[in-house]
Amino acid sequence: MNKLLVLLLILAFPPGGWAQDAAGDAEAGDLQPDMTTTAEDDAFLFEDEDILEVWDPIEPVNRVFFWVNDKLYFYLLKPVARGYRWAVPEPWRVGVKNFFSNLAAPVRIINAGLQGKFGDAGNEITRFAVNTTIGIGGFFDTAKDHFELRMKDEDTGQTMGHYGVGPGPYLVLPILGPSNLRDGVGMFVDNRMNLLYYISEGRTYYGLRVYDKINDLSLDKDTYEGIKKDALDPYLFVRDAFMQYRQNKIEN
Amino acid sequence: MLKQLQGILIFIAMLATAPAIADSSPTDDVRTSVEAVIALLKDDQLDRDTRRDRMREVIDKRFDFRAMSQRTLATNWKKATDAEKQRFTELFAELIQNSYVSKIESYTNETVQYPGEKQKGRKAEVETRIITSSAEIPVNYKVYLKDGTWLVYDVIIEGVSLISNYRSSYQEIVKRDGFDGLLAQMEEKIRELKSAPAETG
Image 1 (cartoon, one colour):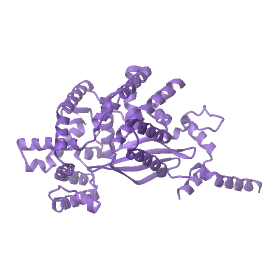
Image 2 (image 1 turned 60 degrees about the vertical axis):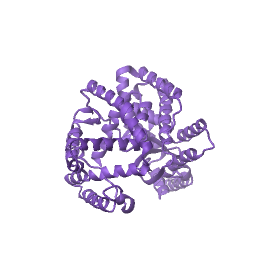
Image 3 (image 1 turned 180 degrees about the horizontal axis):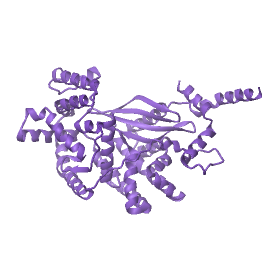
Image 4 (image 1 turned 180 degrees about the vertical axis):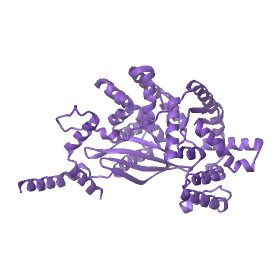
């Protein structure tokens, strides 16, 4: 099938035609007489190029908090997560992750509904019902493992983005990490939709949220360490990755 | 009549050469490379350096670093001299290989699925999914057909394009420190990566 398609394409666009097409898009005056395709000729590769402009008006302040979070990560959160990973077997930690994720189901249900994605909302309702009952309080993701119902992440920030609200200025929040004005506000609203907020209060509530974060970190494969090691400027790398990540979530 | 005959002859010639132009699907090509890398990861006969070298060879064949460099630099590419382009491509290839290899090394026991591909002319996007115990990570490879094989020109992990990410960071660095500054920082980073002790776990 694919061979046929390629063949048809080749017939429709003889090899020489590509170079001309591509060059025509870029610089019309710069036609090469020979037919060799160098990377430069393949201008068609860049059609989907859109540079994500990040508005970062308080960059100096953000960099300070980025530095604070960095230290917090390496000297507190990560050592704790490492000790916890050593002490607690992985299946338990995966269960804990599922449990917290299940408590956040209303966030996904409400926001899928608000965006008119009723199929996704229904899917999340089913997942919540299955996982809370058969999955023993959400500890097991039975819906995914046995019924092929995958989680679809939706939140208030995405809902706002869906209706055209821009990200606003990029923000690095203390402890919470990369965000922006829209998603920061969204996160605040999300927390109020999370069942965790209604089954615990005060210190217990914040304690559980920290536990959730440590548990997540214990399952992470040193993502941040990798960024620190590879990136020329980790601040920029994290900022741009975060903005792209959110934009992609809004579009899906 | 002669025209028609010519057309038919060209058609036949095309038929004969077509398999040489593209004899595998985008997914086939990506899968071959991914599986070669996984096989190397699972081969405990190899020491760490040999394994890394072999992985780099596999990656080198599949990734078009010049196209990636061009995409990353965008407008700065057009301004650069041939020597600068060459230098950047070499450094960038080394950085990408390094980060790709070290990332993939932490996924030894996971499986990779190939849920599908989207093809549009000479461009395609191959979807893969890395299944870990706690998550499923979508990793998509953007490929284009060049000289009969599909070459990777971008990797999209959880919706984040590797190239776009480098592009905006590098653009800022060029704005701040100039093109020479960028090259110097890349060289420095590579030195750093090479001298770093081998970490475990």
